[in-house]
Image (cartoon, rainbow, N blue to C red; front, side):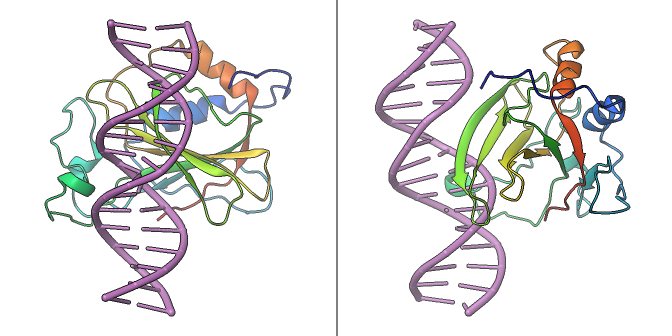
Length: 180
DNA sequence: CGCATTTGACCCGCGC
DNA sequence: GCGCGGGTCAAATGCG
């Protein structure tokens, strides 16, 4: 997990925009990536809230419990609510990009198209239901795709410097995939 | 001892 | 209806 450093040469000046998008993604919109081939910095906000704006929250209002529970707890009250998901790809040697929040891993699955497994994380902050999944691309194993779902309702637990540090560890590679 | 990770089982949606 | 792929839960285990 912790073998950072020694990778890239701080080539991004766009760290600001990234952190911005990550933290304040409430007003989602589609970022257009002009081309798929070369590395454009863009963010993909995938958001298909079918009128349920509450789904967006996790904001201070914290959670009216409209979560999609499946499995045992599910009562059959399953709507097709999609939460906004934000995916981005980064070039990094490590899978775990520490963005300043505390994550607990809760799952790990092999993905069909990928040789690499996908890891599922959940924010450990109480009341915070933000999830993220991390997956390495088969095509480029140097690229890690991280998908965030939901938004944090609390401040970052670590310093922002750290986040910047992370950004220095990776190159924002490009193109955001539309999920869902 | 408390918390995070691991790992297998379980569930659900979807396509055939 | 069944199988597959994806997502989550929870018990066991590990680690600080």
